[in-house]
Image (cartoon, rainbow, N blue to C red; front, top):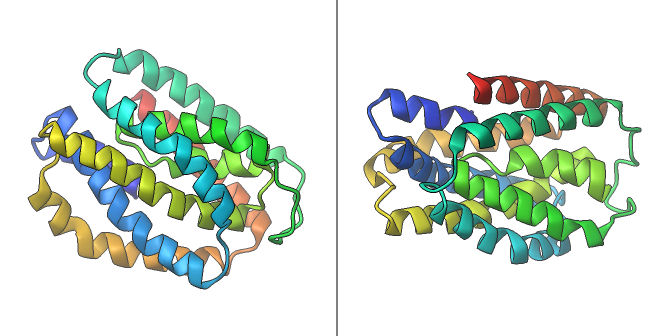
Amino acid sequence: MVFLIVPILTILGLSIHEAIGTSLACIAISSFSSAYTHLKKGKVHIKVVILKELFSIPAAVLGAYLTNDINEKILRVAFSMLLFYLAVRLTVKRRAKDSKEAKIHYERVPLVGVASGFLSGLLGISGGILNVPLFTIFVGIPIKYSIGTSSLALFFTALAGAITHLKEGNVVLSIALALAPGLIVGAYVGAIVSHRIHSDKLRVLFSALLLIIGVRMLV
């Protein structure tokens, strides 16, 4: 999973900053594959993607530039607490109508964009970890559409962060390209599977993933 890329790359000998930059390049590759699949299934809210990215891209660039200046340990603890909160909310939230016609709170999308973009650029994490629960809980998008919409939005956000890190010399292109085939296939398979799982089970699985990542961020 993409959230394991940073720790794995550090184990392989990359500095934390190189691991973050290379991780964003990998996320851009995998999210492009996933987004293409979700688009073919009609599970993407294009308007939400455009509105979110107007705020996510500059936030991701800012986060990438500030990587060396912010106390990462404090931020990781705060981020973990946020993930725990979102996991609980996502589990107990009343199920929304699983259709594209569900009521969407567009006015809340910019805030989601700033939060996920900044943390993606800063920590080299997948912004989808925040996009999906925030889209579902606060914006009102059913989870299958949240996943599809997030994948397309994530591509642009991760690409912006990766380009910024590349300029800073923090992307090891040889590693990103070596991982590309596996990332593309894995993202495609994951997108197909997500359309075959019942929405309620999908929400529980995603909540469990949030808890796992939250714990991993603290270790």
